[in-house]
Image (cartoon, one colour):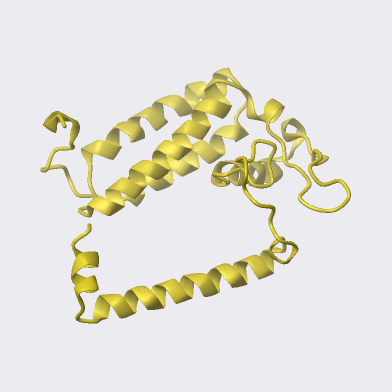
Length: 187
């Protein structure tokens, strides 16, 4: 591979949130602006500036830099598809997940929402990477089971899974095994 492609070793060290959080906020709040001209005018240049900063700075951990770059490019891809090449309010809508109207369009209009509803709509649109619950859902993703459709049970199951994974990682990190050495040096 061409060595010029790799970022410089003497990049300034900054936290990954320096780029990722502003990028996500700009993408999410861009849908609050009127479609087409104003939306592109006020959001494209700051996003391009932040996109250029991905390779110019580092968190000091290669794996974290890699994940930040992946997340930023996913958000940028969604921004390109729904802001520059189309209008999200016209082409994207939520679908009913269960019941007799399953798969049909939700009765909501993104153009006439109040500010708070539009912010929730845009956050849900930006953060649902696989499009579950939207008309552009990724093909072959299984339906969400009925027990996970309620926010409380989803949060409880997610929290318990995260706690188990955290416990396992701490156990591996604190034990003197070959796995510990391999895990610590992969970043």
